[in-house]
Amino acid sequence: MLEVNGIANGIVLDHMKAGLGLVVFNKLVDGKIDHPVVLLMNVSSQAMGKKDIIKIENTFDVDLNILGLIDENITVNIIKDGKLFEKQEVVIPKKLKGYIKCKNPRCISHFDNYVEPEFTLYSKDSLEYLCSFCDEITKYE
Image 1 (spheres, helix red, strand yellow):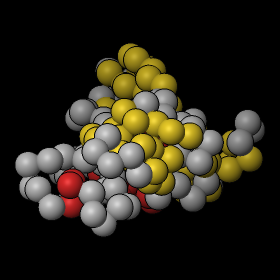
Image 2 (cartoon, helix red, strand yellow):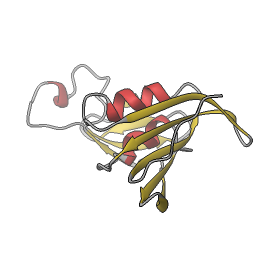
Image 3 (cartoon, rainbow, N blue to C red):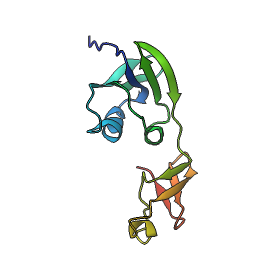
Image 4 (tube, rainbow, N blue to C red):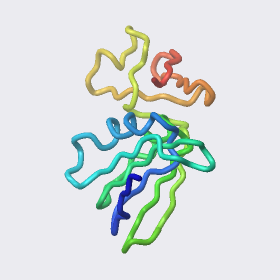
């Protein structure tokens, strides 16, 4: 049996679909923090069958937009003094700025360095976003 101790102060990312833990780790954690991090993959869950969990000792600003794009079922638990202090739900962001690139190679966002790509949610089911500059539909992948 695998045993992972609880954390005194930090963040627990829970309810991730099995297999997405590494994606979240790479987008959110990889190389950005120097605190202990535990990635648990394929952990048994009564509600989900299997799930992934990330535990991060110490706190930092969690980018809920990135988490919402990866899996809107992720729960962000803030732990203080060994107890659950706050629980945050993630949502699929309606507006995105800088997270994805427009798929239109002629879009101004590809040529001007001062232009940060901006998108508006077009389809929640397929995670498609409409570019504010050229109206091209781009899918988050």
